[in-house]
Image (cartoon, rainbow, N blue to C red):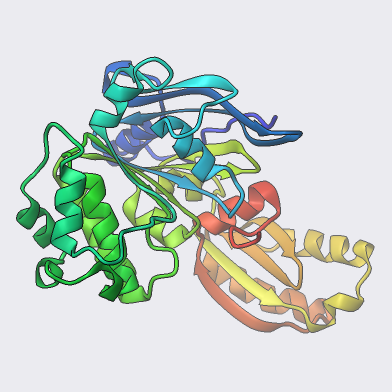
Length: 345
């Protein structure tokens, strides 16, 4: 099993940097933690879906599980929620162990599953009332549906809702018991950009209300915008855990220069290696990587890197295409650690 790596920010002594570094470190004060996950393992025959996952979630934060499909995010969440029994390890939510106090756990959590089957012929108000009846305590229904932007659909049947409206209804049902912790399993998958942004606003509003949100996603922009800390997962293991800013800083570069070399498919591995070594010597470049049909140079001095890059390619008589510059992202962090894209199956 790969060792869990909690990255640290490079340099800096400012107060905001120190605060962020402190926020990225876990286990400093257990009283601040509302979820304690210790060594969770889940096997299906000879396949290990989750392999020794360990982390803590702090009260009132949006905590993200980020990784490609098949990384183990959903299985991990389901074990914390008590929907699946772990083969090894434990999960404690708000002081209750899912193995011994599952009824108590269910009282303090709300869950929006990755795939939610709703009663299509019921009206929005009816299904919300039905879910509220499952709990000893529930919130007023009409204000809840108003907060999910569903007031105008309150008397519509579920089958007539759009995809985004159904997702908002699923989240309303997860909030009907006024939970301390809300689990959202890839809530924006398959939604159009406007519907995604609407859900982002709703999630941020939950945080403002003091709720803890555990969010799984394979969208790096979503994780970067919403999450206070991100647990980066791959092949059932935690490979990094920190704030989004600190994870990107682990590359020790603020910018990326990406380009394609048209003749690359004809190059042998030795020529690729030599070319990478040449790019690594360019001013400001901290890391040079080859990704299938493209190269990426990470730099803290974008202008000098671009100037020397053009000079270097002319000297080497290397043609390039599709040159672009951008800010380094969480996807860059994931690819650097695994060699694979977040979008790869």
